[in-house]
Image (cartoon, rainbow, N blue to C red; front, side, top):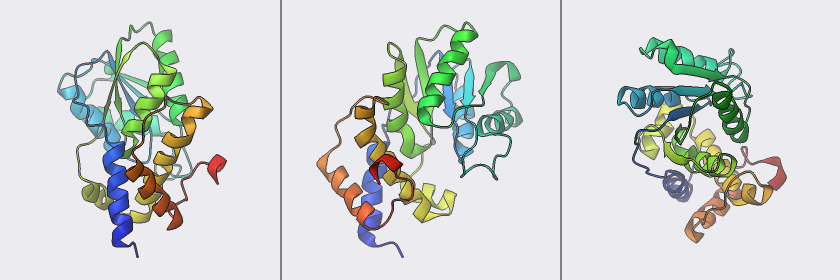
Length: 218
């Protein structure tokens, strides 16, 4: 049973992770692989709105996605986009990345190798990964404009769509932990985290929502 306080704390983290950038046309979109095919759908929706001429889907597999996406996250995303009418020529696949840093580094290398001129990137991720994706890209791909986007939805709707509330809360906690500790590791830029957000994070950790914490902080 998840307490009312934990739900309130989770909503606070959710609101902070969402950056509320207004999508605008960019050189390319990068769809970050995960267990959530909604990322592919959000990318397709933005493509149909004319926000980018080219899409990179990036991601291998993880313990969370091995059964659901056995051919790899990026491959399954590409298949979803093709099913929804995106032309094959507008899609590139980066199938090796196993974390957000690799998503960005490998996608950048793929685009450079293809001779694509990139001045701006539209990042599409899970809603609670918007800030992490933005901070990572700003660190690893300096000099370009970065817009962070995801499927527009409420916290409650997202929890219902995943069907596993504890997993969502674990993910929210893990994403916040990385925002706190990864800048000093050189993985992303530093961002100010409000005290009420860190307090909510600490309470959720005490309540045991720690399955997605990075090992360095255990």
